[in-house]
Length: 88
Image (tube, rainbow, N blue to C red):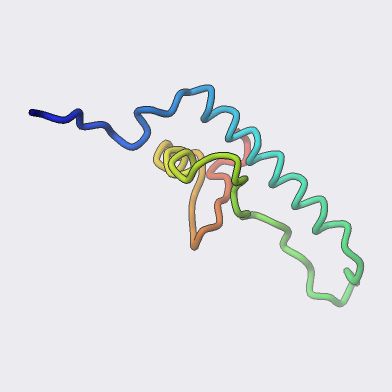
């Protein structure tokens, strides 16, 4: 009895990955706008670098985010994800 050997991203459809990527970009944009609108940003505050990595939306399982990293669209570091190429 031989079991099917699937790769981790084999059961994820392109539509799911596309929707997850869209949700990630929207969350990143909203987080960035929220950070930019905070008070206390003065000329002497050292300058903010902005938001570049976030925790991904929890509507999608971790396998989705791992697959997007494997495809090179996202980068993961300590549970936070960032866009690999911001022009996507």
